[in-house]
Image 1 (cartoon, rainbow, N blue to C red):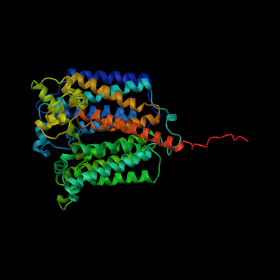
Image 2 (image 1 turned 90 degrees about the vertical axis):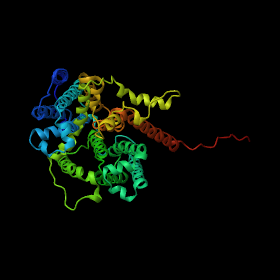
Image 3 (image 1 turned 45 degrees about the horizontal axis):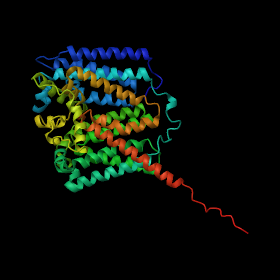
Image 4 (image 1 turned 135 degrees about the vertical axis):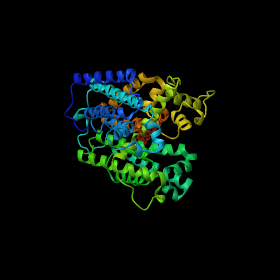
Length: 472
């Protein structure tokens, strides 16, 4: 939290929730921005989204779970249209592929749905903040060096294991040159081990949060240094989300235990991201070994343009709905649970993942290509415009619920288990969220169980010889 002493009253929070919730419903149910030139609508939509996102971040705190999610949500959904609206990106500078959707007659309605989702997110979060209040200063540790939990050592070990597993995957599938490949070449090479790779990233996200909030020491510093080295390797390949979401989860956890970045460091971190993203966009297409001799031009606005592509899947589901496709009515949210039951229960059946079009990543790859997905798109695909308000409102309430957990230890464990999967969902479909949360919970329970068992063994007193009374 960045402004712990500047908290509005519950009445103000409820008024804010009422205003944002009413606007979200009005935009979702009655709003329309379809016209011959969608760029005409981008200006006011981008400005409104900045006001909503900025007010919610100011309310929750920069390094809160709500604040970080809101910032990422804004960047991935509104970055491109903001850059176009204010002249930083001209439509002629976009590729034919980008122009095909960002200038389509459906994209302004898609941006309107994203704005309704942004408003609903703010409404849901502010209701919970008004009801539960904000964590008090006394809820934080008295000394920032104090660990919040006893799993810091295990978290550091998890970081090393995950990094080693991922490196082994790359070496097995592509050799040393695999570390220099482009993103498409990396995906093609590691396709057969995608489940193992996903497991490595899951363990890394959970372990990083536990390590950052655990006891300080040489092992913790080594684990963080190893993650830094991994970042330098995977970013040029194009694995931006894998690094970004786990880094943000760790920074939020650090903030929860009183180790948040200062405003100056936060600003430097943001500028570094803006510089890095357009460079990585170019490197991702060719790989390091195929880079031209000259350095790529650094244009900060391209960072927002690159991140703003999450509006693309929203445009697609709005288009498909307008063309007469029926709603899934919760099918994509139910699919991961049904598929899990099919693996565990005898007699239960489920189609293969690559054939199950209830999985939104599979659907868009089948119809469009690997464009990722969005929580706004998934809510609209299932329940229409009203579903965007409902789902994003519940998501905002969930994020604020994490921020208002009173016990710092419980808050950090919750971040380790559920927050990174929720962040990943900003750019992907819902299908992996339940499995990743369940796996994270299983890991944490197992670690506490092992610690309890080892503690019982170490603390068990040695048995003394029984006293035998001698007879004289």
